[in-house]
Image 1 (cartoon, helix red, strand yellow):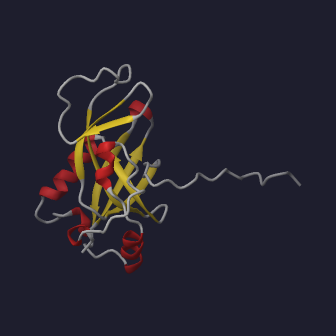
Image 2 (cartoon, one colour):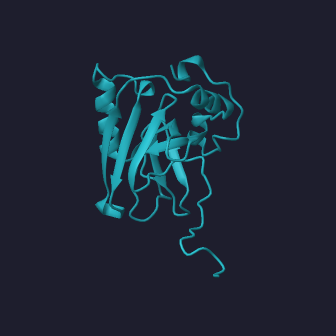
Length: 175
């Protein structure tokens, strides 16, 4: 008998932030998005702003870029938990914006979205699809969302969005 089972893998600690896994990633968007711009400092800390940075930051990571970002709360079906999804991948942003602008889909809080990740590093590709039928999130998802207050605006000041107690606004509750 070996010390550990032969197929044992050390489990990853769940995070408040969603990271795309290889393959299918199903989500339900639960909040409105905040949008802005971000870069990473030499210390690998994110710096975010609602508006474009007026000057090129002196502390930007070598070969770093300023990117537009979106952040919103999601239900991650793979992990069965409420998380923050921060997007900087333009291909995903364009695809979600296309769903939002399509009158047959509209508000992405009203349907699930399937995001498939293939590859790694610079060779990563994403496909994004809305998933019919359009239906409400389950009562369990709504309850878990309401029980885990997340203050997305804290991202602009590099504070912890999970640390502040906030009241969920009715317009941010899933239908």
